[in-house]
Image 1 (cartoon, rainbow, N blue to C red):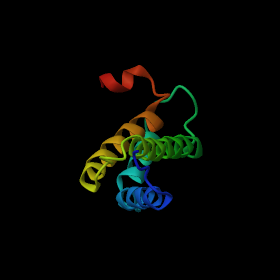
Image 2 (image 1 turned 180 degrees about the vertical axis):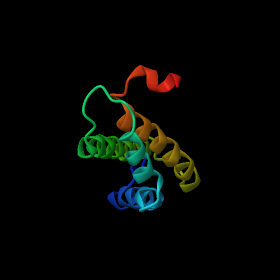
Image 3 (image 1 turned 45 degrees about the vertical axis):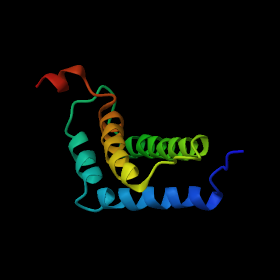
Length: 111
């Protein structure tokens, strides 16, 4: 019988995730800088900071759910901290691009 990760392990994954992300949300981190840059882009809809951040947090919550789900379905080889350190920044970049430019005009990419 395979052993499932405990609630304590899932909480540790969430803490590790938060520790990896917190520097990116600092005053001069990538998230505030990308949000500021996104306001200068040409969007089809009005760009609203709160809506963009709401989508970002929804996607980050989904990433946590994906990590916990992965660890639960792979109890013999859960995601290690070095793998988490490589995965989180890449997924954050994906989230930033999607959330802050999702309603941008296609011509943005061709400048």
